[in-house]
Image 1 (spheres, rainbow, N blue to C red):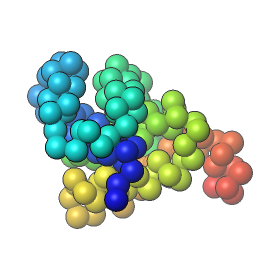
Image 2: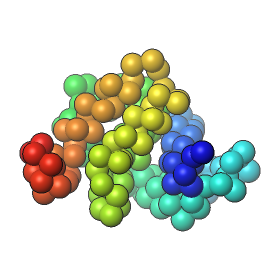
Image 3: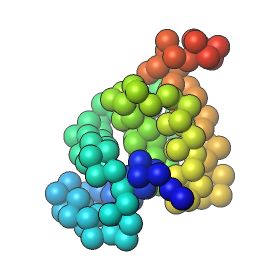
Image 4: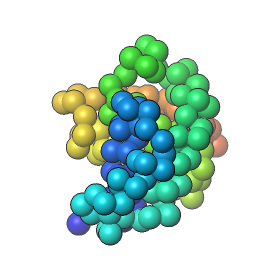
Length: 144
C-alpha cells in the first residue's frame, strides 16, 4: 500500500507535468488534482507544498538542477523534469526527509510515469544534487 506522502508526490508530479506542457495556472491544476482518483489518500498539505512551491520556485530549482545535468533542462522529458523539480524542492524545504528517501521516491515516480531507463538518469542527477544541496548529510554518508 502506498503511503499518503507517496500519493501526494505522484499527484504533484502529474500536476507539474500538466503545468510544464500547458502552462495552466497553479489554481486550475490544483482543482483538477482534487478530482483525481486517490486524492483522498494523499497527504494534502504535502501535495500543496510541493505543487505550489515548485511552480513558485521553478526558476531557482531549475538553476540548481542545471549544474547536475548533461543538457539544458528544457530538453528533458516532462516527466523527468517534473520528478527532478519535486525532488529538488524536497531537498531544499523538507530537510526532515533524508535525501536517500527523496531519491528513492523520485526513482519510483520515474519508473511509474517515465520512459524505461529514465529512472537511472534521475538517480544520477539527484546523487549529484544531494552533494550540493545536502552537503553535510552527504558527507556523513561518505558521499561528499
